[in-house]
Amino acid sequence: MKGVLSRWALANRFLRAGFLNVRPLQDGSLLGVVYSGIVRCEAGGDSFMPVLQRPGRTMKIVAHPDGRIFAGEYFYNKRRGPVDVLRSDDNGRTWQIVHQFGPGEIRHIHSMMFDKRTGSLIILTGDTDRESKILSTSDQFKSLSVLSAGKQRSRHLQFFQPTMATSWRPIHRLNRTIFSSYRSPVNSACYVQ
Image (cartoon, rainbow, N blue to C red; front, side, top):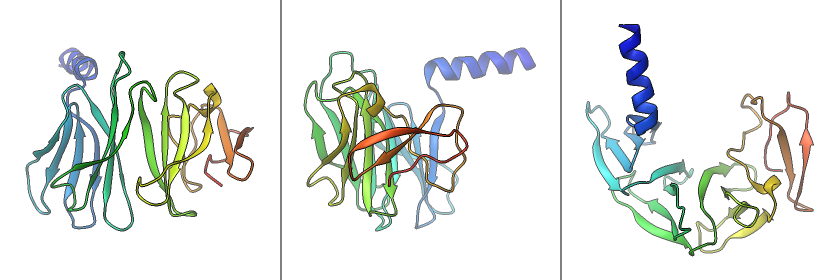
């Protein structure tokens, strides 16, 4: 039995089958990220229905405190085509593109988070030096500010809120005033200042 389960887990990992992320929403519904899209389960429901299909792409999602939900595309993008950011204003039922990174501008979106201290969304992109950026928007993608770009030290996969546990990876703190980062002790949290 254990052998069958381990093969199933390996197959799921290889095929990116199953849920990659599940997020509870303010209305009690659940939003799930699966390979090639987003699925939604109504509050009190027992099944997920597709609400956004993006073949070959997974999504990085973040919920804004005002209830809007943003999704950024993460996919292989070898040809460096456009990368979309989408927004839902109705708890994930419908989606529209609110920003598109042009061809060659970035490879994909590693992560997005809401920075409670500034009221901004932070967007982390990659992969090459030119594509690696830490971006911010305080007006829901009407404009983007570049906090850091152009080097691998701008290539981050995730920001940690100060209350979250840290990982074994090198931790950098971003100083928004001078737009530089510096290595911090591993036992401290990485966050946007």
